[in-house]
Length: 238
Image 1 (tube, helix red, strand yellow):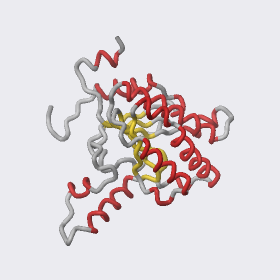
Image 2 (tube, helix red, strand yellow):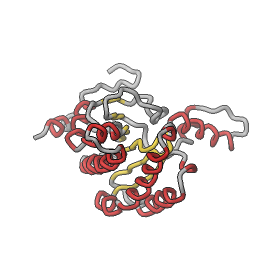
Image 3 (tube, helix red, strand yellow):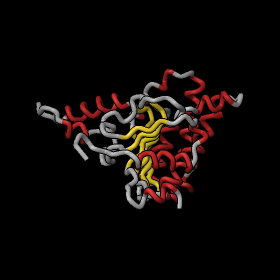
């Protein structure tokens, strides 16, 4: 019996995991490869991790794919990332069907090229009835931007009503997904970088040195074991 299986006898896994996939570029640079190679390997790591999350019956995973700040990167890298998103999202239908994985996108995709938008729409449509695990891809996403867009949605129909926390929550992207329980960041940095700011109010944070392209189910098990050792008080006393 693995450590994770032993812990599961007396603990609960998170319902929603957020993952900051950091270290793709450094992984490639360390191997004398272009940064693009790191992003390509990062997609493979995401597939390995989501496959194991589905096996463990974790219902929601959110991947931080492209942030509102990532537009500051070199144009050739942005072009490659957009093409990678468009081709890989659309080419993994067999995986989605096997895992019964619903794919959704959170963020402002209005700035994406039409090829990426079409791929996202086709993928969301193809997976709309799958219900084993929901994978949300945060694309052109920023936590502050999401909150601002939520407030603006509320203001369109507020009729002068004062805004509440519940109003903001109801107007977030994919508001039916529960708040994130665990945020995992690979690559060694210890910050959440504008990711799920509203929903992360009581999230457990876990930071690891291993670069994202190295990740597999054992890395996920390590993060989940660390999570199961935490005491979540939500402001109260346990």
